[in-house]
Image 1 (cartoon, rainbow over the protein chains, first blue to last red):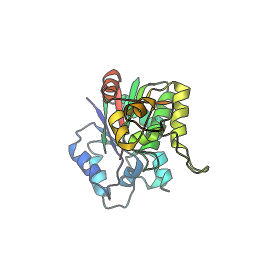
Image 2 (image 1 turned 120 degrees about the horizontal axis):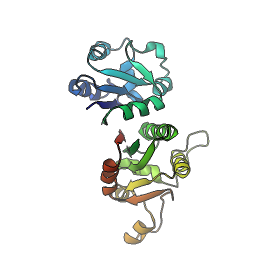
Image 3 (image 1 turned 60 degrees about the vertical axis):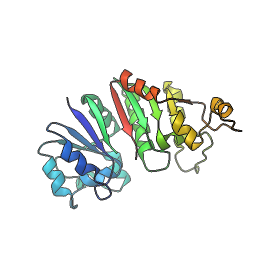
Image 4 (image 1 turned 90 degrees about the vertical axis):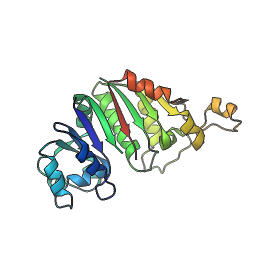
Length: 102
Length: 130
């Protein structure tokens, strides 16, 4: 059973991402959207934590939400895939369920 | 694939109503079915036909309504959440002795059972909120 986890909070505002990463098992997918996209960028205080998570989970970030915040794709940590809304739909369909970490 | 969408956040609050809208639109464009969009908590405010956003801003309510019109979407507002927030249709107006209605005709007010049913009938339930 694979699960798509969505995190829409900035890691500098709420501990949703930490809670999610502490819970998810191997093979899970995590999509960062809305203010959650800040966690996908290089040079932040959570960069190492996010990079470490890449060993066991697949990380995705919603491109339109990066763009809405003036963040270009070249600022995204290597290993994190940028997807659009169609890609978000595909991830939701490919996994068995979707869990939102609100 | 059959999707059910849950919206827990009001329009112009943060971004979740927008995210839910774009996800729903993308799913429909990809040929998926959207069984129901369920508006819960502050999400019920997405159903007000009285909103008047500035002309250069997106009209969240009209946008949902247009998508529903185009794809014959079932958009349901939670009755208990609606009563608390003053979201009123004809039936609620009469039942609770109110003097007006404010719900957009593309939305309908019903119970939480509609969310449970949507979760059971759909392959995926995707939740958006604050």
